[in-house]
Image (cartoon, rainbow, N blue to C red):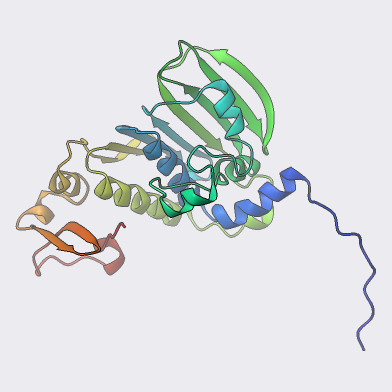
Length: 260
């Protein structure tokens, strides 16, 4: 026979705890954190995105972009849950034109890592440097900085051991990171992507707007030879892509990339 549980009061959770719980939904592995940071960079209008990782992203994830950057006020607001510049009213949900809009990713990632934000808005002369640990702001300084944003994430899940133990080996986690950068490089051939792991450059695309060049930069020129560009249109929209010759074989997940 079940025993009656002790009654406990229902109360609002502490903001830090809420962010750590949300991180489990938003950030299940380093590649997921990287995905969110890349999407923020793209939404900021970046044309160059540099990614540096160490230990498969567990020890370090750094994303540097040349987008519009943030003011001090915006940078601090971005660390608040559900703070976003991408929607403001219910009606905006019907016309979302950005990759992200919920305002959860940055505070969630910050809550389970040691994070630094270096950013400078294009209209300002100086930048802002913010240091956080476990989501708690340790320092905010006015500094010299290039236009754009650099977010550094160290020791992911250092304060959530249960999540940390589910991470796979370094090669496995790095494989997910390479796949993530590859997908965005193909989806945005007009943006230059660079991925470095432990000082070794793994990916570089020139960002010249040509999809075949982006594919060749990552998968090699031999793969691109004989590829065919394909267009299709309908009453509901249009699609563009490239496909390879039949004799070129790759693992299914590595060979099919679809972006809506």
